Image (tube, rainbow, N blue to C red; front, side, top):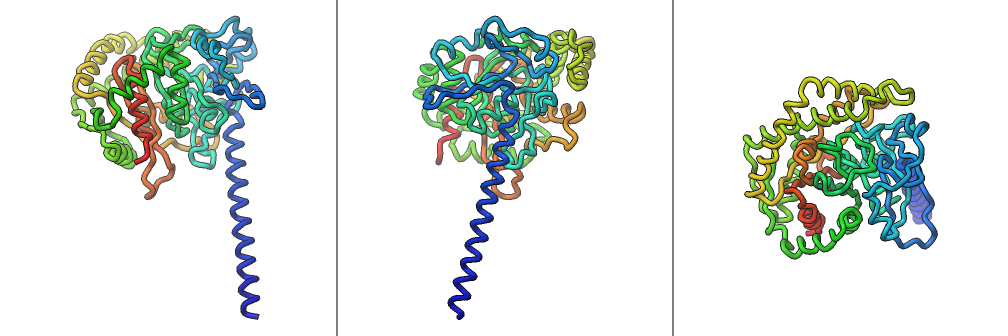
Length: 429
């Protein structure tokens, strides 16, 4: 009797355990499906047995025969299909990669939470519950890669629009040197000062392949960078600490740099003040240029109120602070050149805190500005330098999210060196 009762009890516990595991798996699958729901504005079926690289393209980049919506109801309904591909797609066409679709984004790429009320907002899977913002503006590109719908996605970055969604999705995102990749055929925000195109990927191997689709011969540059500095101890990193950053994020980044044996030197407060000024100036230029590029849409039905508010804020910056900000650009570039005589790369968190939850009622101007202020990304665009967002594990104690993001910044045209450092960070101990 006793043995039979014990066996029955064990059987009941085992059945309950299987039920719990099945429920957890079902919940995870449901959350993954939800994350995939709005990643694309247009998605195409991949042929069975396809072995080519799967490439997703942000829908502010022209693709022949398709309307470039730039995330806007107005453009989606009133624009003709693009007559030609943007030049940045040339190598991908030449090499026969498998295009899988045009990815979602914030309207006109001018807001940063990742919300798009017309096409639907992508849902981050970083917290496993779809509450965290996907980050913008390249929100769909980040989610398409993070959820396995694409091997590589192209995004655009004016003030952090590749690196922020990379941080919110737990993937890699590379902002390229200004002018390295053509932005012709890309819906403009700041084409003369800030706009760039770059790759996003889940791992270093695919990030290299993505960059090789944007710059001919990049794979060889990367292999040379690996050969020249194969170990982390060969690389000197200038560590920048910024007020307002979550201590847990700083600790996670420092622990990872130590564990991988990079040579780390602390950058001084004088440089920090220069950085903060460049962040402010970059924001002024980004907003001012958004007004110059998009003011013609202020009276258009189908353009959201939030987007119009951003454009109107840009007019105030353009008329009040724009000229003075641009006059400081050369001095900031010179400051960075001096720092890169002493260190190979600069390290700073991509975001000052973990990605927040999207408000229950959706985003608004106050929330967008809050996320904009969380970014440590705009100073890099203002200088024109390249930067790489790298996923970094958070310590287990007290963490609300498993991953944060480290931003590595390099001299102009140092994309290969940045990805090599990313490779070393990704290498298991």
